[in-house]
Image (cartoon, rainbow, N blue to C red; front, top):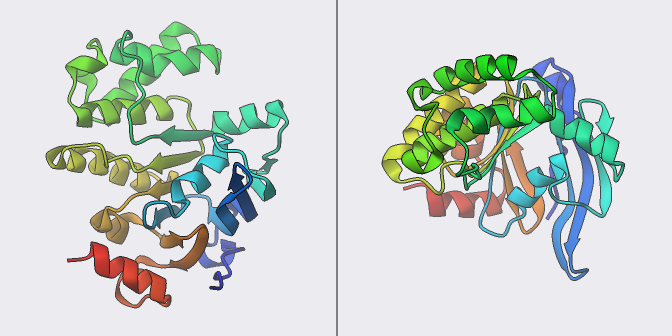
Length: 259
């Protein structure tokens, strides 16, 4: 199975690359080959949706972008910074890359406002007043300003995920990664989170989203990629991806998720 050429993509969008992953390889315990030479370039302001079956390596791949997952071969560059074992480089990249997970990972003993201000105060060295001002603006932006003084346990799952998005945005990242952000939510809560993500994409934020939300991918994505068996097997615009896929593996995947 051959991988499509996915870099450079700057000529497709007219923007400069902000994520460049080349031939990324990863093994677990030296015997499970989870990423098999994956290459992908994301340009500034682009929204890329990553799809694929369970175990395809998609979540592992985007988690390499901020060193949450180490990789053994290949190179990853984020906004001109080479991702290496150098802790200074890792810290610099993590300041520029926000991430929202499947589970909300909020601190239960802190209020919503405290959850959002924690990193800017400790990492960005902002004053408490500046961090709170920005946090309140972001909570308003994601539609939960009235919940600022509540604790996570008092919120619905959709509200907690919107807090998690506000928390990631509080660091003023250049890139946002989403790892199946709606898969742990009840169906009626999915839309409120996707609406926030749509607004964020419309603002020009660079986003890489692992999700099976087909409607979101069709409407918001600049590109949709399919990962399977640790490889990137399709990379195309949404219309082409969903209506005229090139790969047989993509056709099989779509037959299972489209009804």
